[in-house]
Image (cartoon, rainbow, N blue to C red):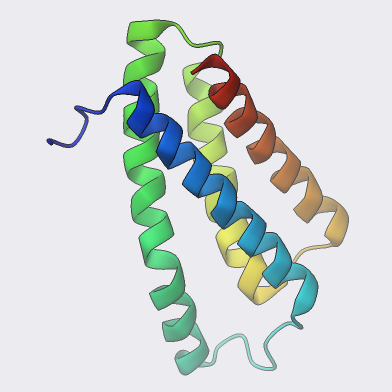
Length: 123
């Protein structure tokens, strides 16, 4: 199947998987301490290895959802889709570097979760 040629079920599955990843990130944020040295190359490489698949999934998800927003008129606006991707990317970093206050982290988390849930209910 070509990129961008996804059915509604594929987008639903992608969204469910991203929701699972969001939960994993939240648990990581809550259970771990910030790295001792944020410039530690080994730590950076470890984070990069863990987050690359999620970044790739987000990129695919965004383009697929934007296409379906245009076609099927789901109850989500294009800027919400883009913002959700950007917020999830922020959470990817904050979940490992633990470099934002809990309140801000939870605001981002709830914002992403809201759009995921909205999409899932529309699909």
